[in-house]
Image 1 (cartoon, rainbow, N blue to C red):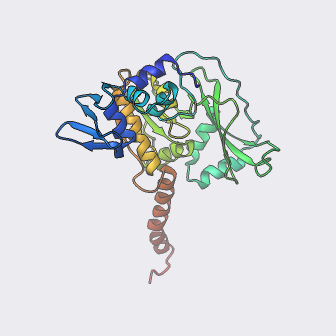
Image 2: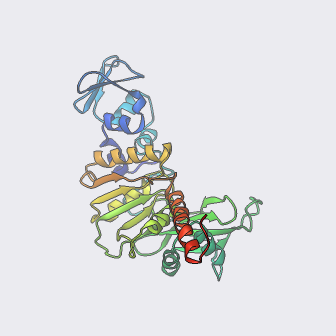
Image 3: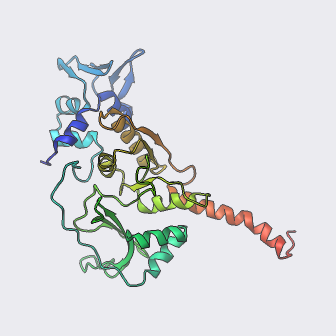
Length: 324
């Protein structure tokens, strides 16, 4: 059975059943009057005024955790993971034994990685910033057991702790579909770009490093809006919860996950999780999926294409080519 630390258990226990079902299983809810709900699976289970009671079983409670354990028969660890979004590994807010991270060696000239990001529309000054700060580099993936990827060029996106030590690395193929985390990666430490002002209270959250860099590149301003930006490496809230615990100055969180079923559902679940938590509920939570495309990189590429189409007639006129 997976080990669940006390902080994580308390966070899961703070989520009431109605919030959990609205965020994760809305199909289970059936309105039964102005402020009362029943569930599709258990018609005699009533949810009202922040509490639930199962008439057939003869017991009730408040938390989603109790419901999943007592009504659905889940184990404790399984129920905690269900409430918090089934993360890949339990998140701890307390000091933990540091994993040994196995990082691939960087190449001397990251030409392919830079070209790859430029092809994805990322602005050159943002790429330069990542290279200079050491959170992005190019490497070669080595694993003879995976012959289709062995020797493939990869982009490496690093996640560091507050002391600047590498604790996580996302590997993304440049000319392949390879997507892996380096062995020993700690999912609490996602790829991030900190705000210039250390006490900045705004945080934007993305699924992937590419989406994070794409949102920065979409800015039409000469200076990209100053805020903290964090990649979750998926849709688990692990990295977000740990970042908020370590960065008490954050008072506004904007979830910028993908505009698809998984991303939209995850944003609702994470919003409900934060709102129900005594520790994080005072923060303003908003959702901002891309207005166009599935994710922020698609939105960026569509924006670049649109700009090219707008500029084309003007360019033809400038060089004296007839538009007829």
